[in-house]
Length: 126
Image (cartoon, rainbow, N blue to C red; front, side):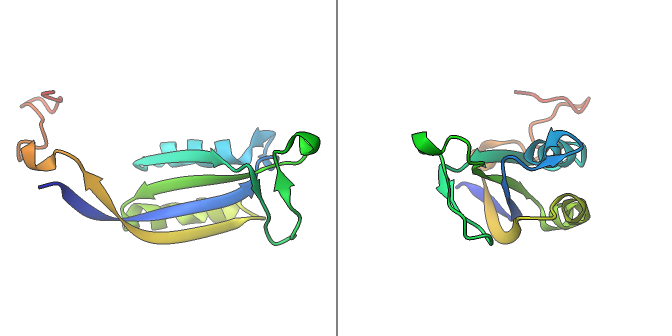
């Protein structure tokens, strides 16, 4: 049987042209999540969308100058995600941050040894 565990997903919606100290904001969020030791983060670029401004952002040929929406998705335990939220509060001044309870599927967990597949020195056995 495949094992699951409870987790929390944070999704940050921002415009791709937003920056933090001359770096794309989405990139700063991903790098901070990495430094914080979170399980993973991915950035998804939207092809069309709108936010609080009600202005449509699109990737259609005649609108190449429009900045597109991006979503940064981070998943980890609730404790770790909530500990990361103050950093998002510092970075995200325009946009939307959502939190969703979710489950992480751990494929093959039932086939792994109880020690997590580690040898005596703490290294992976696979």
